[in-house]
Image (cartoon, rainbow, N blue to C red; front, side):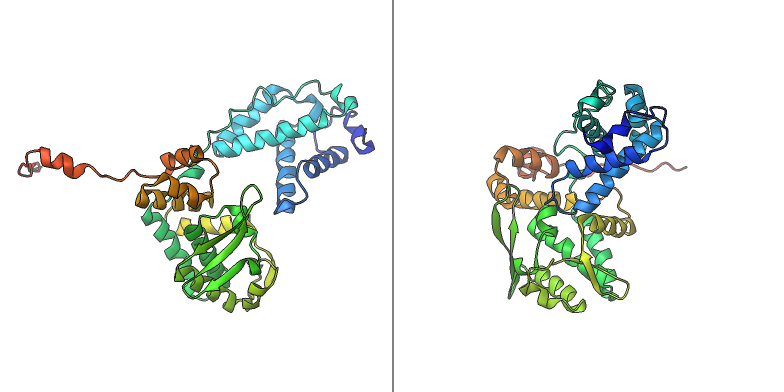
Length: 341
């Protein structure tokens, strides 16, 4: 057994998170996160914080936790977080316990995973708030807020406007978009071609044939004095300090937080970056009515996945009202007099 884990067996009356437990949390987080994962440091930090939060809430040593403690924490989470988030948090804690129980000396003291019977059923794909597509009005209201700030000269907003248009015009997934390097983008007169690694590892070239995306990207890169990045393997999107100087690569989490702020100013709540892809899918399917075309646009391997996807996010176009109207005898508009009072 790893020597750093041995002290976990002892001191079972511990309530605060001791050094050995903190070490175990760190080792689990690193073991359960692939080295090539994008935003790995942020993911490690979030995983560690979830386990700490759980142990601080129950106030017990990991070996003393029982299913009722997990149930209490789950109820607490459900009062303030989404269904997906609750499931994700409990899955992390379950993973931590399964990892601990791989060591025989620890397994003797933790005979079962306390999360197993208290974890909720996994949310159905494409059936949660995250999959809600924006309406056209919501989409434009958010873009108006980003554009208004960009027009005041904010480099952050110029970047966020370009990122948002990239999302909406290409339908790229989060990792695909934030994994882009400068030389993955080829500017054209009225648009651009982007090269990205699809889900599953395949490389794909996609044309985005609209000048809006081209102009937004160039405006951002010129303002940040990074136009030369298009000929390098450096990240396309970066953070910027208050003076506008580029820094570390921009993460999807940072952009998601910014997007929520723009949406809040537009009076829209419960916004997340997944909805950009769903909005892309909604518009394509509503305008084309073609499942195969939508499947191709989304890079889905399975048509069944696309079918579930569009059933959730798209509004079926009305092709029949005129037919019905021809059969219904027209009547004068029924007027209802308002009460005198």
